[in-house]
Every structure is written in C-alpha cells, then in structure tokens.
Length: 342
Image (cartoon, rainbow, N blue to C red; front, side, top):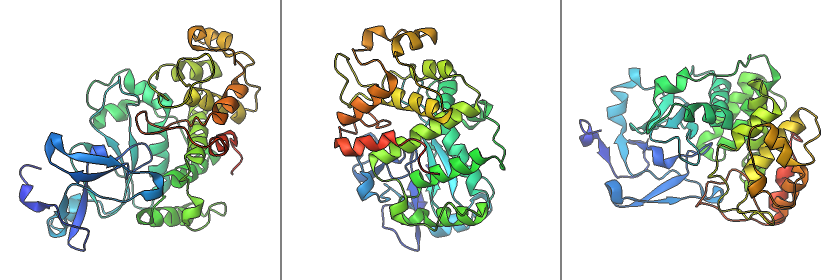
C-alpha cells in the first residue's frame, strides 16, 4: 500500500472507485462485520454492524483506473478471503467469508480465487475454513499470522462435487453470506451452476439474518464437516472444549460459570445428523473424550435439555464475545430446528 498510496482515497462509492477491504472488516460468513467511522492507523474507529443494517463502508477506496490497468492480475469475481492477522489463542483463529465483486483487499486479507463458474467450491471452502475442526487444526500450528501456505497445508476433507454434502454446504453458506444485494449474483449464479431446484432465486427473506437461524445453520455446517472428516462424537466433543473463550456474553445455565451454548449446540447437531441419541449425562461422556467438564457443569446434564434450557435463557451460539447479548427466547429456540431445511 505504501508504494501505491497515491491511488487510495477516502471518497465514496462510484463508478470510479472500488472499496478496499481490510481484515478488521470481516468475520466468519460476514464481509460487512465492521464499518469505518473516523481516524487513521491505530486510532481509527470502527463500528460493528448488526445484520439488520449491513453496508460496506471501508476506510479507503482505490481508483478504478489503477485496478483496470492491472486487470490481468485482478480476478473480477467473488473470492473467498480469510484474515491474515490472528492467533491460536483468539476466541476463533480463522475468519473466512466471501468478498464481493469489484472490490480489492489489502495485505491483512488473503484471498482464494477459484474459477468464475465455481461458486459452490468457493462457498464449500469457506465452510471448511470456518469449521471448528479446521480451526482446531490451524491452532496447532498458527502463531500470529495465517499465511496462504499454512492454510493449504491443513488437511481438507474429501468432498466430491457429486456428493449431496457438497450441495448442502454451498446452499447453507449462501444463506449465511448472501444477505445483502451485492451478493445477489453469487446466489443466483450458484442456482444455475448447481441446476438446483431446492434453491430459488435470491430473495433477502430467504437469507439467514436472524441470529437464531444463523446459529442453527452454523451448527449444521460444523456437524457435517466433522462427519466428513470422519470424526467420532467423542473426538468432536474434545475439539469443542478447546475453544474456552466462546459464549462469554451469553447467559449461563444454573450453577455454571459461563455459557457453553456453541459447544452443546454443535455437538447436538452431530448426533441429530447421525440420528443417534445424545448423551443423557455429558460429564462422563466428555470424560471418555478426554475432557473433564465436571467443575463447570451444573445440575442440567442431558445434552438436549441443556440446549433447550440455554435457548429459553436467550443464549445464541456463535456470537463473538463482546459483540452480542441474549435475545428473546423465541428467537433463540430457532436453533433447535436442526436439519429441518433441505
């Protein structure tokens, strides 16, 4: 950016400018996590946006002519992207989403470009990258930066394009990502690419804006990715316990120091996916997985009951700490409708 500083401006959206995306603007399945407000450098002020008010407001724009001159190296396509600045001790390490067309990214975002006609592959890649299983693998090796080579050294599950899981994941990711008009073409072109009768043309009402529905879909994705990796229920349970910073803003169950709604919902989703009964007592179940949860578990020990009671308290899974609060119980209870949409 230093060598090209003359090409950047703080103008407005127009036919002459492209928005410049930075790592702090995105979150998992969200390319509009924050908008720029004021200031520069370390004193810059950014504000997080609710899903009811998403918009792209970068700190900088870049002159369209400068990009067009380098068009051969700039794919004018939807691209997967992940934040390059992270740590294995963060609440979540990998933050991936899809960047819209006619946008550029600075050094804090690494982009992954597939062929223009492979939107499904882009969306499936984002699903895997954002999964707790993949994140756990990355945390074993990551330090302060996520590089392209590190990410592509990680084991990816084998997902054949003809497998129904491939279609399922791409549909679910589209519902999470395509919540605003600039992503409409990604959705509609995915319908054509997959020749899908189960995914109609884009309508904002079909996307996942409500927090409860987003949590439900994310738990389904995590469960399906765990299944594609070939993990047992105990393996997945252990991995979920290695993310201790999750759910710090959510209300805890009686007798417990903090909420575990993300852990419990994702694990319940795997049991639902496999049509197996969830454990009646999570303490011995987690002990068999190599994790002692007895000190942080209250009197509610049945997995399904734990999720139901947490929802009644307004707890929602997958909400970044410091950025959320309990919701109305009827909204939180939407998380229980696992694998009801096909």
